[in-house]
Amino acid sequence: MSKLPGVVVNGVSGRMGQMLVKLVSENKAMQLVGALERSGHEWIGQDVGVAMGGAELGVLVSDNPLEVMAKAQAVIDFTVPAATVAMAELAAQARAVHVIGTTGLSDDDLAKIKAASRHSVVVRAGNMSLGVNLLVQLTKQVAAALDADFDIEIVEAHHRHKVDAPSGTALMLGEAAADGRGVSLATVKDSGRDGITGERKRGDIGFSAIRGGDIVGEHDVIFAGEGERIVLRHMATDRAIFARGALKAALWGQGRKPGEYNMLDVLGL
Image 1 (cartoon, rainbow, N blue to C red):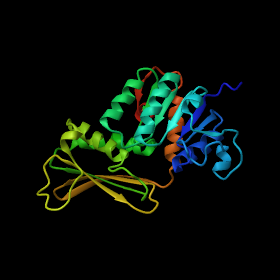
Image 2: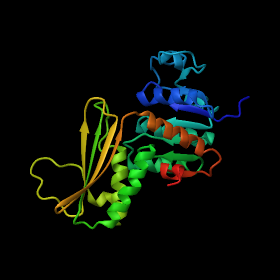
Image 3: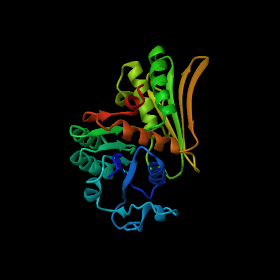
Image 4: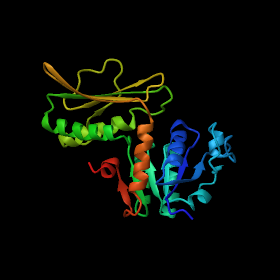
């Protein structure tokens, strides 16, 4: 029997799910042991490799997470909030590392995930790329160095199919900026401008979202002062960067103490 950690991919028919299946199956440090989809999906019962239009991988797509998780040491989850919260409980029961790239989670969702992390390792991040996590650190440092005379605006762009806004990455950046200034993002967040809004409130952190085409992900953090602007930017051209980060997190979490971690922990930042 292989001693490599067994990985389950949740939501295998999505773009990230298919990317994850491909990379996990090619990775020599882990093995693909499960492929999950929602009940009633046309892929259920098919070999996941064949369903993706390729060669057999020896793993059938299932809608029974309880059965699949019995073989898992990690589950990678880029799905929707309800599915992720349900998976958090199952991962905790299985003592499997739960890598969460799902965005749009509510405070109630996050509380349930935190409760699950008392029994298993949870690695949750709005973005799992090295570059974005470096950008988060830079944003915090610049925000700490500049006072509120510099207005902070976060502009993000994604493909037309993205269903939540602002993006999870934009919120990560907003949290970093707020932390740098020693304030709570909830008290300074401004993401609903429309119509006659009045002047910009000093100290607010603004968010703007662009949706179109096949944009993988672009994020600008703008510090706008009188007579000068500082712009920090990250542009993703291949969503494989997020998948590779998730695989790194799944391996990093093996043998760790239960708890909630993020990609800064995984990357040692």
